[in-house]
Every structure is written in C-alpha cells, then in structure tokens.
Image: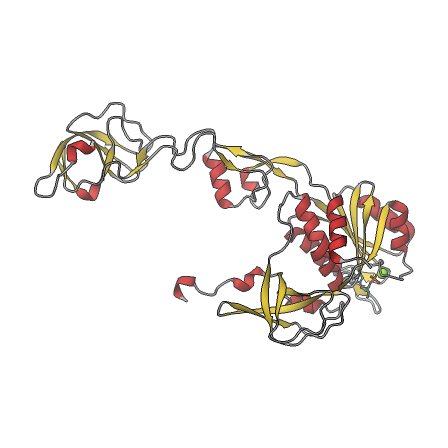
Length: 413
Ligand code: AMP
Ligand code: MG
C-alpha cells in the first residue's frame, strides 16, 4: 500500500515540464507564459488629455471664476491621434480631445463643461487644480518594467497588455498531447450495435473531456482488446503523445494482460494507493513517456485522474499551482467510514449565507457514473478518520466552480 501523497510525489518528480512555442496572442489565452515581458516603452508614451477640453497654463487661469473668467486665445483644435506642432505661451490655450498628446508649454486641462467658447477665445469659468485631467507618460507602465512574468496564466487583460506593447506573438508552454486507451474484451464502441453482455466504452469520453478541461489535447486510441499484439500496437501508437492514459486491467490481483504488457514495454509501478475509489494505479515510463494505468471502473478512473493525471498535465503545461481549489464545507449527513484509506466522497454543495453545506450524491459505488454527474465536489475524508458526522466541517475539492455563479447580478441581491 502506498499513500496518496507518496504516489503523487513520485509521479510529479518524473513528470517533465514541456518546452515552449510561439503563438499569436489571441491563441495564448489560458496558456502559461514562458518568457518575461518587459515594456519597450512608457505607457502612455506621452502626457495626454483625460478629458475633452482646453489645454492651458495653470498660472493663466488661477483664481478665475464665472463672474471673472480667464480669457484665453485658442491656438487651434487638437483631435486624438494628432500632435500639436507649436508651443503654448502666456494667455493661450489649445482645444484638446481625450487621448491627444498635451502640447508643449501647457500643464493643465480644463474640462469643456467648465468653459465657454467666445469666437477665437475661450472663457475659463472654473479652474481645476494644477496638472488636472492629464494622464502622465509612464503612469500605466514604465519603459523597461517587467510587466508580465514567465509562469503567469494569460487572462484577457494580459492579452490586451501584450497588444498595447505591440507584441503580436508570445512564447507559452506547450499543451501536452494525452493519448487515451480503453482496454477490455467487454467494451463496445459508442456507435457499435448494442450487444448483450457488453459495456459501452464511456471512459475514453470522460477521460478525454478531463484532459481538455485540464488544458491538454486528447488523442483517442480507442479500445484495445485483451490481446498482446493489439495492446502493444495501440501503446506504440500512443507514444506520439506526451503522456499516455489507459483504463482497465490494472486491478490488484487481476490476472490481466495489461499489467504484463506494460511491464514488458517499460518501467512500471503497480500500486495499491490508500484511497477509495481508485485504489489500483499503474504509473511508469514507456520509451521516455509517462504512462498512467487507471482502474476501469468509470468513477475510479475519473477520481484517479483528478488526483494524479490532472496535476501532471498542469505541470507539463507550465502551471505553478497544480491543484483544484478546495473549500471547507459543513456536512449535512453522517458518512460512515473505516480507518485506513482516504475517501473521496462525491457530493452536492449548497452555498448558503456565506457558508457551504455538503450532502453526498448517495450510492458511492465505483461503477455509478451518475454519481459523478451529480457531484459538484469531492469531500476528502483523511485516512485515519472514522465516521464523519453531520455538522462536521470537512475539506472539499471543488469540481464545479459554477455552483458559485449567480442568477442575478450581485449588486441586486
Ligand atoms: P477492470 O479494471 O478492467 O477490471 O474494469 C473494471 C470495471 O470497469 C468493469 O466492470 C469494466 O466493464 C468497467 N470498465 C472498464 N473499462 C471501461 C470503459 N472504457 N468504459 C466503461 N466502463 C469500463
Ligand atoms: Mg478489464
């Protein structure tokens, strides 16, 4: 028997981070940055107006008021995107639009609402403070500043920032390609005619979806029957991927071909992990590629994926934090348990008045896929824990963050 944390430690030690690739920035969202980004210039690059109004010298308008306005000569109109060639002198102003560079000689912008046009002149009715209504050069980003860092997860604002620095391409970590193979004589493909005694291969689909959800690229190898050549050929085929995941045939005490074959092909460990579901787990390297042999039961394969494969995919993709968010929840029912194994209990989560309550999805058998459909989280009951009681606070791995989504905007509730 191996502890969950020991298995995880052993696995992550062997999992490499993949190399980087250059991508157009619009394809880089949700990827991990593989380079530091330094700003090549100040943003904004020059002092510019934050308002439609008049660029003025503050000393000319000090003390002006509605009754005694300062009257200035308007040298011209300056739309955004253009540069004023001249220089402002005493008693002068330039009509300026939001975003236009502040012409030399001026130090303040008066918003248009506080002025009155008078032919070639403008009356300043209400002077702002000195330096007001100006966005100063470099106030957002300074030239040479490290604005994004290798390891950053790229969100929409990051993509906008890259665009404002005129970076159309960016270096990110590669997405791992993950080959998925289901094994077993009893399996039927999704579009094959239904046959008595057969089981539809659902694992390939749940696992492929878990791979995409984790940011990997699934590669379907289909089903390998329990025959040596077929298994070896499929695994060979899977070696084009960065990581291989099989399901079925690794159960403890199983007299299964999968184990024998994997052992012949590479250096494998066949563990009994101190967890439920998902006790049997194979992990090793085949021709330099990590391979996970997950148990065949639909729930076990998904829960094992959550614990071991997902963090591996995240590590390969350059992520720094490899694990799903966890939260504390209050049990709404007793959960019987014996000491010895960590239990991952499928649960519904009910957020209520700042607290979260958890109820089990009912029958926890490892073949009950509908319990995974219902599950919004996994209650983690530690190895030594026995009966967990209603009212007890427990740790929950959050599978479905949408439970915190709102039906109406938060400012209305
Ligand atoms: P095994 O680990 O190969 O002994 O399989 C355990 C159980 O999981 C058996 O009842 C299988 O029918 C079921 N199972 C195995 N592979 C799959 C699969 N790809 N899709 C759905 N169920 C599966
Ligand atoms: Mg089998």
